[in-house]
Image 1 (cartoon, rainbow, N blue to C red):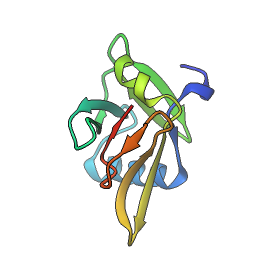
Image 2: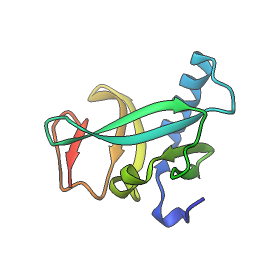
Image 3: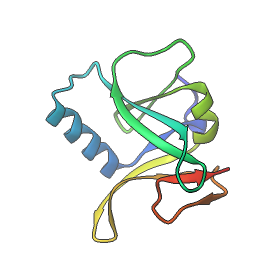
Length: 114
């Protein structure tokens, strides 16, 4: 595990939603949240989230707020100190990445640039 000052962080609301989604999908405690950065979106890079249960050799592994988060090394370079949040309000429902490394984001919040 990497020191928590260079990690991916998970808010309480995001934790609640992740745990609920895992339960609804029938995933057990062997599964974790895989977060990655892929090319695309209106700003050039997009976030991708999946549930997975197999770590790869170069994966970066974190645990924050009781949630195991895994990312590949290339994606981690974009995600250092990012906080994953969840909103269920009227201004937009869903997961949101608060990424201090992003130089700009698009209005939909799904993509960013560095």
